Amino acid sequence: MEGEGGKQLIVVGDRVLIEPEEGKERTKVGLYLPASAVDRQSVQGGRVLATGPGTPIGAPTELDEEPWKIGSGEARYLPVQARVGDFAIFFRKASVEISFEGKDYLVVPQAAILALVREGAAGPDVFQR
Image 1 (tube, rainbow, N blue to C red):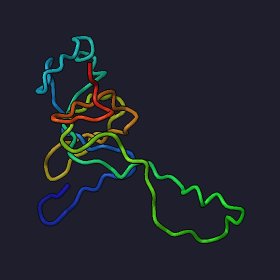
Image 2 (image 1 turned 90 degrees about the horizontal axis):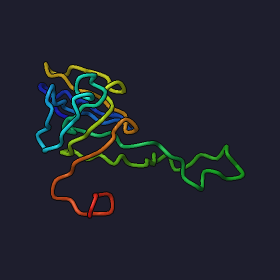
Image 3 (image 1 turned 45 degrees about the vertical axis):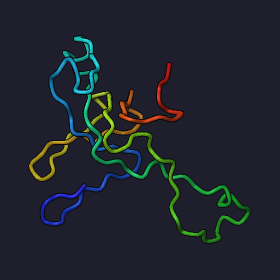
């Protein structure tokens, strides 16, 4: 994410940068959060602004009989499911609050995201009836 003065906020690993939606029973995308969840703030929603590359994984060829060999050096990642623009519902306790360029954001690990709302998407990871 680009800030003022050429500063960049880079999300690492399997984390997601979210602009939180505060204190509403109904989200902008039309989801209703139960009062018990909102009151205790156990779950929260927000818009995904950036994602990390994912969980680093080793190449299957790196499990060779000669582990001292130097590999290709290219990092490989299992990508996160969240995409920029998605609306995420996540566990509030798992998030970390940060402030960047005067705005507050939440950094959330992918494992803490319960559901994603993606507009105009059709694919295998989209709920269909």
